[in-house]
Image (tube, rainbow, N blue to C red; front, side, top):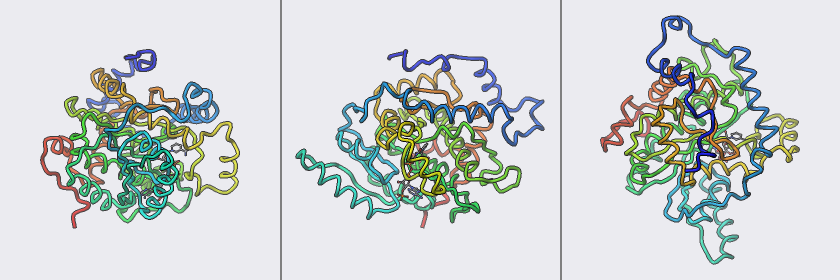
Length: 389
Ligand SMILES: NC(=O)c1ccc[n+]([C@@H]2O[C@H](COP(=O)([O-])OP(=O)(O)OC[C@H]3O[C@@H](n4cnc5c(N)ncnc54)[C@H](OP(=O)(O)O)[C@@H]3O)[C@@H](O)[C@H]2O)c1
């Protein structure tokens, strides 16, 4: 394994590891009555520094990467991707993978695939892509999707939780399940999908769950008692909703990574795509959208932005790296940055005490029991509050 890339200094054991371990054992007496309700100035400024740094320097940091990213052979892989657009679906299918596009607009997906097939048929090949309906704003839909996939008893090698929203609209919006929309689409629904698909991922082992996260998680804060940001302890804004949902995803992924035994052969990763010119800005005010798209020297194209998730989904060294983090009792799961290098998620993501609380609260919200992972890997049935008709 090329330790030059994979063992960055920040991954070596630091005094913080000990702090995190102590936190996992439970709160120390002096913290007991002090519930953290937000960031201090220094944490906040440090978080924003990471965001600005990625925006300004992502091109320089990723200058060693080819575009498109060359992929290793993926002919044997079946990949579920929650995304309608072409990257990372089309590059995976062009490289030979069987791709399942999990989308809420199947008709639009079929039209798109037809277009890709026409363009690709010039090469004398056809793309192996199917479409399945999935609406992340409905946990019933997530449970039904998982059930429909699992009953086929097919192996699943890669799940890319790519779909996400950043909605600027106010007032705060809630799904019909009663959850704040950013939290539901960006964290709760992908978490439910990942857990319910474990039997298929186990069949496809070695397999991977790749969560498309964001550098914005560095400015995120999660209060596990107030995942919907309705208590009034913090003022809601789109930024609070988005960044909090992305941090919750890193925390949940870290605990899932810890709970999956090495024998399961399932790696869990989060990735940052960088700042990418996509439709994610469609709800922003027009002047901000224009600014966003007028900065091509800073902003990645969708193809460039998909490199970190394609890398996490296919690089042969990823499973070994994830296992190494487990054996070192590192407090967080692997996080791959936009330049396809492992990096350190936010300081708040290292707070194992909160991460375990977010794990428990998430399972409660998506209607699963605390021991669902162990039961599913054991081949036992798990009841989910959602999906059963
Ligand atoms: N663009 C950036 O600068 C940036 C930066 C950091 C992180 N990210 C992350 O990258 C990921 C992809 O975002 P993007 O930039 O490609 O945004 P995008 O162009 O808006 O694509 C988002 C995708 O999510 C799907 N989606 C949204 N709501 C859904 C729902 N309820 N059910 C099913 N699918 C749903 C959309 O499908 P429809 O077409 O049906 O709406 C679309 O395919 C997100 O997780 C985002 O947070 C993006």
